[in-house]
Structure formats: C-alpha cells, structure tokens
Image: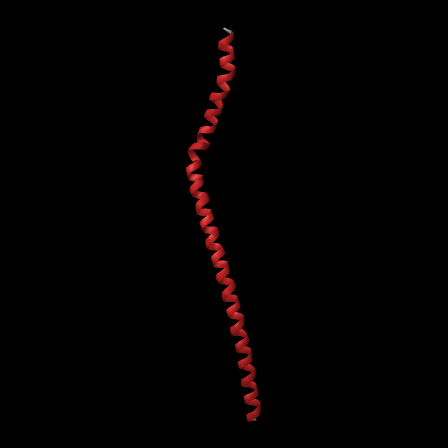
Length: 81
C-alpha cells in the first residue's frame, strides 16, 4: 500500500507537469518561425536605415550644391545690374 502512495506522490506531479508542458512544446516550431521572421525583419530594417542615412547624406550634398548655385546666380545677377 505504501508503494502505491509513493508512486502516486511521485507520478501524479510528473503527469501534471507533462500535461502543462505539452502545449508549450507544441507551439515551439511556430515560435521558432516567428523568431526567424523577426530576425529577418530586423535585418531588413537595418538595411533600410542605412539606405535612409545614405539618402540623407546625398540630399544634404545636393542642398549644398543648390545653395552654391543660388549664390552664383545672385552674383551673376548683381554683376549684370
């Protein structure tokens, strides 16, 4: 009789633990796919950020050229009268 009590005390928590862990284990493949997708999107976001920084630098360069051109036009207009 004591053996059955010991088995119940040991096995019932193990069964309960297995039943609690089962749903988590069944969702692991989906979680892995989500993690991979998240990493891919993070890499894409980083690439987009780098592209945006590059475009910002190019826009600043174009703005400087535009300012220089505007100044030259003003000088030309001032020389002509």
